[in-house]
Image (tube, rainbow, N blue to C red; front, side, top):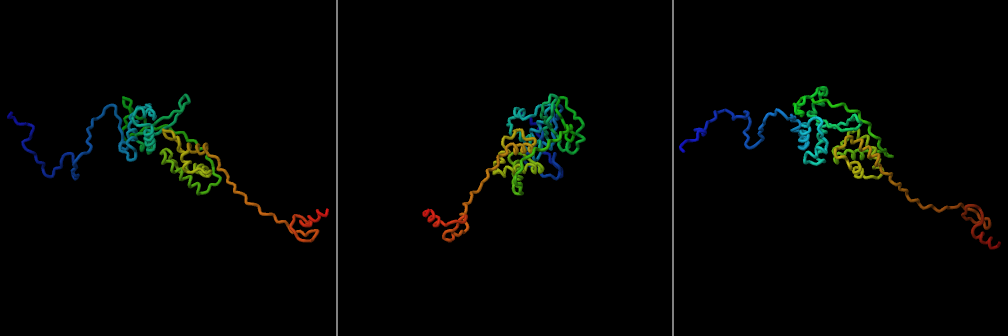
Length: 309
């Protein structure tokens, strides 16, 4: 009962003047409150190294960052389609498809079509752990990447990634209808309409070359008395949930296949015909003047002649 607590120091130790507290750099202000503290344990198996350029991306949404991390952790050959991801996570197909498009826009994801030995076309999803390295040093991507023993890809930040197979050249865009009158006003209205399509769906992002190719087709619709809102609905309705791979080709097909008939011609009403004025003739009976298409007798002389007969 009389034994004192040996863990309590007899008195407080004063810090020497000029010394900074531990874990604080000289010249930094003392922060009160919280902040993240890492309780890290070094992984030796079943881990994936994620670059800060993805984990702290300024333009990607939190869902896209998490989905990109999940895709980089998958083993080679694992399914990564929207149906599989929807069954794995609570987010719906629309949100997952939007996140995949974000990753594809910033280079963390590519979708490539390949023909199997049986002739079937399949879509292959390529996850890039460092798009900047792939774009700036394509020759370094040819080196094979080692895989951990558990089959999961553990890429160190800055290492080269496997080079993707070369893409086949894309086919030219289909032809679009042409307006009967291609004035600068109607073409500018068509260009503005095409530029606004990405506000309805981010996958309908068109380049300047694609817009110049599609503008005459939109002008042909506007020329047929179709309102810009109706043209926009026709081009953006029923888009695939997984996104559009070639938006310009899809829009060119819709502009041609769904082209409405020409507007009916409005014929103006005919003006009433003016009365016919015959030339002046001299009557053969009384020599008086009267109007008639040919020479002869006037009306009175014709009457007298018929009565006399």
